Image 1 (cartoon, rainbow, N blue to C red):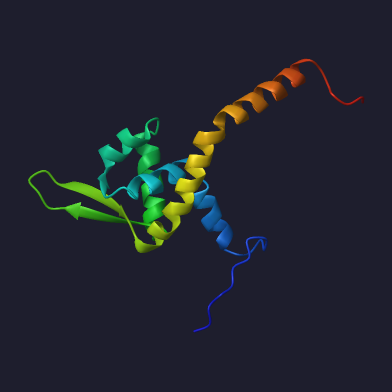
Image 2 (cartoon, helix red, strand yellow):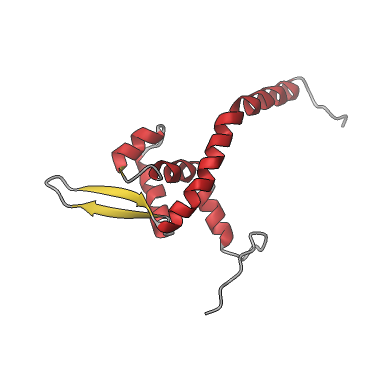
Length: 129
């Protein structure tokens, strides 16, 4: 079987679908969180903060559908579900953790740039019409 070569600049390449999935804010938080070990839904929701149950469920399903996480129903008196990274998800989580650290390190510069830009926009057009 011949292996396909991806090209994210080709509008018909499904590698773009992968980028869309992993570029979502929630996926970029869920995958590195699961790199710390398996978690139940409530644990993930507490860890991430600010995510609704609906969005968490939708994102987990999309990640599972794409083979990045594994959902396991745990047999117990009170049934619960646990999520963990698949091998494919584990291969991605390190790259996303690097992006998380970059955002944590540079958010003050980004905040300042937005403030400057917004102040310039309020003071009028920069370029003559």
